[in-house]
Image (spheres, rainbow, N blue to C red):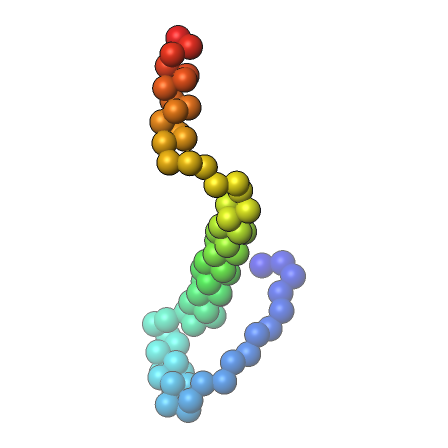
Length: 78
């Protein structure tokens, strides 16, 4: 697994007891690692999407029909 660090969390006693009772059937460390990996991927995707939206907002606005005019001009050249 390479270089690792420990993360600890507090859960209610009842939850801890359920985790302890189910440990033979559920690999809790792997479940938690998987959750953390998935959540970090979601966070990164949101961060990138926010950056794209911010960049898009700074672009100059175009008039209605601008894209159609570009397509028409391109077709006329051929």
